[in-house]
Image 1 (tube, rainbow, N blue to C red):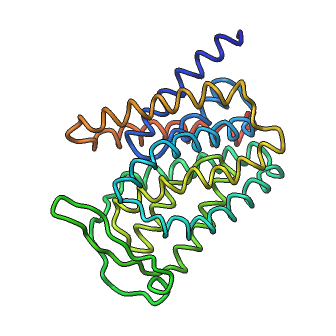
Image 2: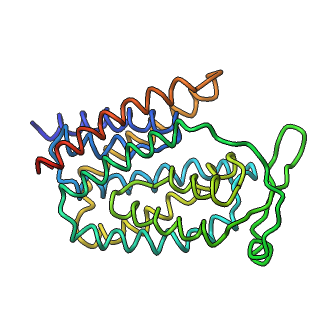
Length: 278
């Protein structure tokens, strides 16, 4: 395969990954890494490095709009980012000592869990129960709705912080933003409204990925020839996806489509990991 053919296939695959990731909210890394390792035979460590760089680019672009609209809880995101950055740095260091086939099996398992989480019905309930630690750290907030601003309170700060460390470690090892786990921590554990959880997670993904990317860059796993088409493709795909999403009345079928795709990729990753082909 020539360099031009490789680049064009990667560009088209990354565009599709960014499009699907944007439509479902899971990010493009879930498709980019299997595409690079299974279809193009790229070492999984280089695939993770490219995925991390694309996560930084997409998060930087999309998070700005949500911050401007006042939906993202900036103070909470910065506080929880302490946990995810520690976890992401630890995960990136650990990844160098973990065999590639084990990373592939772990990645496939996380894909299956993320698919199930993405299909789970989300609660729009607003919590008003007070928490001493949340009040002390001033983490409670509000977000805009059609009728005005809706106030909400944050609970179980310690539990959410601990889960963010786990999300960071997985992000560092696998090269994904761990957005699904972050949303579970904020939406399920800290009882933050789903709308705020997803936008705050989006704001955090880029910072978490940057912490891991530093370690991958130092070890030479950030390859410009792979990263450039991946970043361009994923960003263009994410932009197209956001435009489609605005015009689509219901995106429920997209979740099932994406869940089906990543389940197939997960099974292939686990199968090839068990056989040592990755």
